[in-house]
Image 1: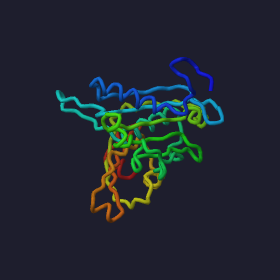
Image 2: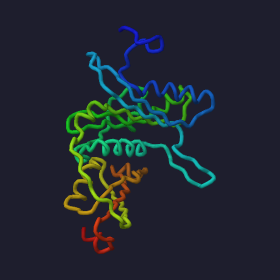
Image 3: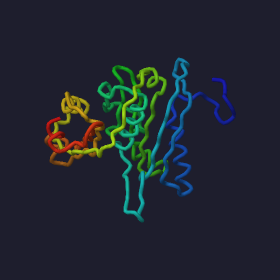
Length: 242
């Protein structure tokens, strides 16, 4: 292919590989905790141009010892980032699925990864950099997200509605569920929220498993639900009857 410049001699098929190299460079100069992002055009094998967004986090997201505050870098952190992006584009969350890919390249963790789809179209991928590859690059525990913004924009809701902001305090309720591994998180949320009113946010807090649960083919999910009403302060009765 024709070079774009001396620094970019070939067209890129993805962006995340470049961010891994940037993370490796930073690690070599003792900057092992980085949060990187890039948006640029990439090209498919048939030379179709697409706009992509790539995000990479290496090391802890936050480790503030002075305020005793920390955020561990993991799959769910970047999943939350992806969900916030989809929310800004007004994609229907009930039509977005996350599924583990069985066949991945050596650089990607074989079990900690997900293909993100909207209906039947691939929006992107979340994954952990394979620890073996991370050791070769001498980088900390690293997770990446790459989204095809061309597909995201194509499926975005073009009609925006304005809603009044509630002046009342929101309320949250957390639940824990023990599920078989075959049951998808998205399907559980659809069933739990069907017909529920005044629900403004859903957040997956944690997914836990141990040797006992693995043997039983189960996992434990902790989910937080946030409620609010524009007209009144919701009490316990309002929330439990939702």
